[in-house]
Amino acid sequence: MQFPRATHPIPPPANGKSQARAEALEALEARFTIEVGIPRKIASNAAIPSGGSILLRVQLYCSPMKQPIAIQSWCFRHFKQLPDFFTQLKSAGVTATEVCGVHASFGEPASAAETLAPFNKAGVKIVAIGVEYLSGDYATDKPRFEWCKAAGVRHMSISFKPEAMFDGIKNIERLADEFDLQLGIHNHGGYDWLGNPTILQYVFERTGKRIGLHLDTAWAIDAKQNPVEMAEKFLDRLVGVHVKDFVYDRLRVPTDVIIGQGILDLPKFMSVLKSASFAGPLVIEYEGDVENPVPALSECVSRLNELAG
Image (cartoon, rainbow, N blue to C red; front, side, top):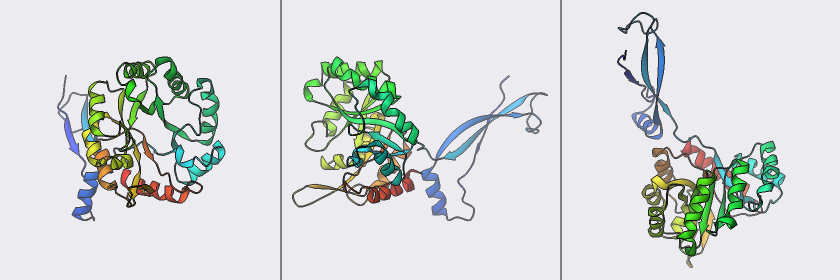
C-alpha cells in the first residue's frame, strides 16, 4: 500500500540573522531531497498499519558545488620536477590540478601508471588534462585517450584545427565514446577560430554531448565576450572552466591578474555555476609571476573558496 508523503522544508537559518543574510544563504544554497524510512513508533501520529513505516521527504540545504578547486599545472611551468610542482601547488592551498604537457607525457600511454604514482603518493588529484590539440586522425589521437583511461582521468580540455571539423570531429567523438571521456573545447581568445560563440554553437549543433565547452573566462573576454553570458548560453554543454582574469594596456596586450581584480565579474560568474549545480573541473589559471606564482594563486584560491563554498 502507498501512503502519503509529507514534504518538510527546512528553512535557511535566519534566527538571529538579518533578512538580507537569510536571503543570501537561500540564494547560495541548493535544496536536495532525500527520502527517509521512519519506523511506525517514531511516526506515532501517522495513520498506518502496525509494523508499517512512513516515508518523509526532507529538503536539505547544501552547497551545490562539491568538486575540489584545482589549478592548471601550466601555472607552475617553472617547476618541472613533480616534487617541486606538488610543493608549489599545495602552498597555493589546493591538492587538485588539471595537468598539462609540462608535467606528463600524454602521447605515451605506458607512462600513465609511472606518472600517476607520485601524484597518488602526494595526495594530488588530477581532475583533467589539457589543453590537448587533437588532429582528428583516430590513430594519432588515440594515445592521449589511452593515457586518460589508464590514469582514471575523465576530462580532457581540447582544441583542433578547422580541417578536423567534419570527418576529424567524428573520430574525436568516437574516441571519447570508446574511452568514456568528456571533452571540453577550450576557447582561446579572439585570435582562435574556436574562441567565439558563433563557431562554438555551430560545432555543438553537429556533435553529441561528449564534446562540450571548457570555458576560459579571460580568453572569452579577449574575444570581446561576457564570460557570464557565455556560460549561460552554453550551460547545457559546459563541462569545465578555467577561472582566469585579464587587464589590458593601450595596445590591447593582456596581463593576468588575480581573479576578480580585472574585467571578470567573479561573483556573477560563480552565481551562474552554483545555480546550475555545475560539477565539472573548476580550474584556476594565472600565468603571471612564473618563478613565484604562489602568492597570487593563493589569493585566487581564497577568492574562489569564498564564492564556491
